[in-house]
Image (tube, rainbow, N blue to C red; front, side, top):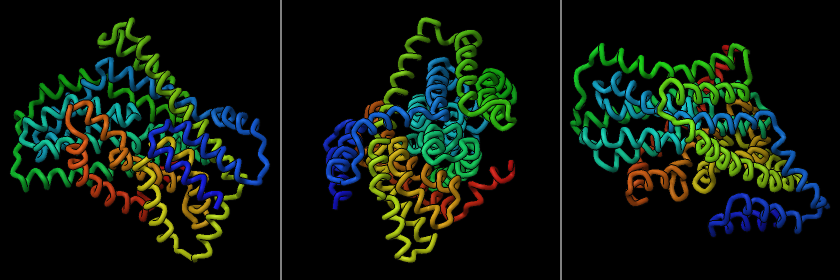
Length: 427
């Protein structure tokens, strides 16, 4: 009964449009007031600060700053031009270019909204000029922005690793297979769409000189993922150190090599990055209050006890968890959902024998789908703003891609080797 009241308070405040940090604190204090655990209020304040005292979280501002530098410094534009020259002539060339560019840009930025903005501004006109209708073009760009949540380095994975005490390096490795699978599934859908709608490529014939020119121009951008993954998996530095190295690298390339980012603008990039980091950390700290009260009231253990009493198979538990996460993703951003739901759902997964890394990938993919799922998927509003269209048009466009992603999610959930093969290979 007490838990039900606290959850109702959380839902009502979310629907009412209150800031997420206030929603979590209010729900936590409601649960604390009604419960009999006797947690002193000063412990909640201490918990808010200690929840941020996690080494893995230091990677968040680094990757955010690096992503902002690469978007503002022309690195993302050169990457998109390179992919376009390589793939423009294949069936469904512009959509396939959009998919690959989103995957690569997501691997550099780790930001879903930045991917929608960076890729959309360049490739949306190309999609429309190539005779793809407005609905398909909006849906493709809005949904593919979510791949940045899945492909490493993912801020959501960093937060999951911090909350679940899981290896961030293993999570990064585990995200590669699912990210490739989703890209292939969406590519198949786009190629079939192009063939059935008789959309032919508008690109010029493949030209080796053009490919070489754009490869040279994008070489410094392509060095970013080499630094990230080469440094982490060679053991030279940790994911947190990689974020800082990447920031310095992006700063040097953007200001001194490409020279598209004036030094006077670096301060504005740093300020925007700091504000975004502050928003994320405020939500993490506030959500820790709610999760602490849940733990003190033994609510996760109660849920596990109820579900194990139902004698559900691991397959059914995975189905139930996926449904819960898909619904949660409609109303919460991935970072908030990770902090709130991991303490609740991880014990259930572990009781069913689901690997902690595999479960992290399942959570990440579910919450990535939530980024473009109505009613509150953040990418929906980003696309509405960028392309100056109604939210209804964007929602209409993403509906087929939601089902495509869910199909890939089912494969990822029930075939653990897709996520675990690469981490096991390294171990």
